[in-house]
Length: 345
Image 1 (cartoon, rainbow, N blue to C red):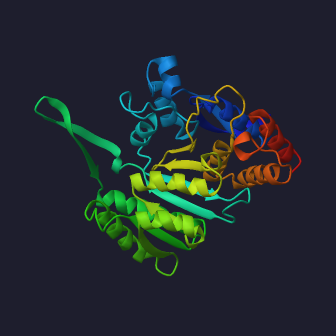
Image 2 (tube, rainbow, N blue to C red):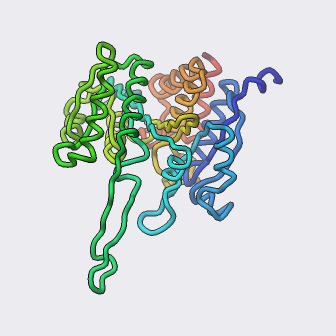
Image 3 (cartoon, rainbow, N blue to C red):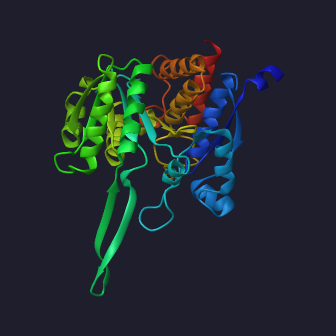
């Protein structure tokens, strides 16, 4: 036991809102079956943060992530329209998590078989950070709405280098840069220009091409197998990463990772699903796969392989699936099945 504890890696655990605590509990149970590789500091954020601490992103949560530089996060609720800013966006800004990685892979054969794609998204710039304001006209204080997008050459170069290094490390052969430089000639033109400059450093190792975002969205439906990696600006990456998840069964089948210079936060990419919260029917695969990325990140890829293999076997050999995957298993039943697979591996 003491030897095991010495090898545990400190990490912040944020259960989140809605179904978050349920899928996070399932994930912790399964990671325990893998030998409890992490020692958790449990903290709150989102609506749970407001409930417990009066703040959607409490200082205790920030302090924990600063200390551990590693976190696993369940879904957080962000109100639409008026209300507090997204805690997800605040976390990215606080820890300068500039690189969002969204890998998708077919696990259950279906409409799109053998999909294996990775999207890398610039996480801190562009339109998505919501630099917005109203311009009053006459007696209407909200007569004009304005949004300002900002990309810097340094940020565009940084995400391009991150993507190319990821491609080299993971033996990816081609990067497709997604843009709208035919219309947003400055904002996304700079992104494309910086990516082309970086690509020259990787000639002979990683191929690069580029595609306009609307054409990319269509081609992902028509022929997703032509793509290997996509590199996107913030807003385009947000949209296309959800489309990619749709190719492999939905947001419940896709993990997410946010990387900064010295901090990484891994997350479920779906929402908090308050309509099914507490019913024990949520699919935990997104955050399970995110924990697999987390294991890869800390050098425990052997455990990540065992985890992903167990998930695949439970889904396809044991045919144990949650309701969103046309099964009948509860969250707990699915987790128990994955544990059995791990213990027998």
